[in-house]
Image (cartoon, rainbow, N blue to C red):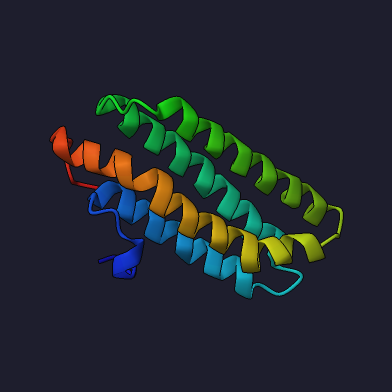
Length: 132
């Protein structure tokens, strides 16, 4: 199950694999010491950028109707993450650490339940390949 809890799975293997990678990188960033935090956070941002690009391709491939709304949410979150990364590069860690501890966790839980479950179901129904 890629280290995901049952509540964290969409039932569509490519999305679940990417989500497991996101959570692993999130955990690495949360546990990073001050010196390692900027690099760990940058890795999370880069992964998330690719994650969102791949998810957009899947949504288009299965003709998911709310792709625009979903992509708007992705842009918002990437903007937030980029903001915190810039603050980190300026030596300002508190806001990034707070986002990692609470904001990212809350966002992921909500996004998974409200926005990722529908395209995952549509991708399965459309018969998209399950190989991650």
